[in-house]
Picture 1 (cartoon, one colour):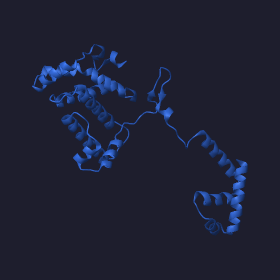
Picture 2 (cartoon, helix red, strand yellow; picture 1 turned 180 degrees about the vertical axis):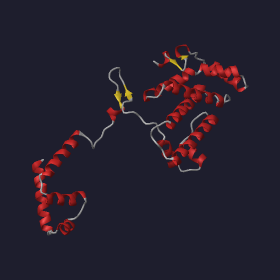
Picture 3 (cartoon, rainbow, N blue to C red; picture 1 turned 90 degrees about the horizontal axis):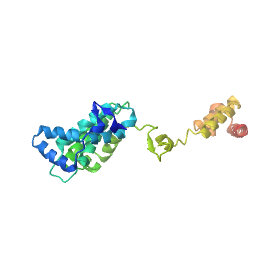
Picture 4 (cartoon, rainbow, N blue to C red; picture 1 turned 60 degrees about the vertical axis):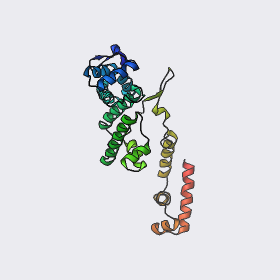
Length: 256
């Protein structure tokens, strides 16, 4: 769908697609300072940007904004690509474009992350970009931790803190019929209809007990007091507390 519309004034259906051989030749010319080759590389790889932003199109973000940010990632990939290594440009370019878009989404997210955690995450991303530029692959968590001289757990926590939130309505599977969304695969074992009805029934049953019985049950089962502690607070014997407790529980079961 996105490939047939106009984005940022660009008719995406008429974008040129470069072959790998053409791309590598232009990259070498661009590295030598050929500005026209660099421009040809950018325009010839805009479809690569389009293919990436389609993964982010269901988040309510403006497609034009995502396209422009993706183009920044593409330009960074072109400028930092190492032509001496036997790696396809798309293998290197896609992570760079994705990283730029994720950085944009993170900086404009409504979810707030602490400054120290965000600073650590930014350093991690910088190390990843530098490592990717030098080795044409993403570093492992251990390699990042070693480069920053921090614990492996800090790297994991920082990366988790900046993960883009996922919409409950985001489709995860479709076989041509109704799509299965994230919400369909998320189970809440606490707030089910059964628990909700049981809560209402318990509340109504508790209302039918005397004030003393409700107070004793509250002390025993909500505050975790012993029968001796309850007897001291209420001012009756432990045997009376035990009897009132048993009768109250029996009444609750009957009313429910």
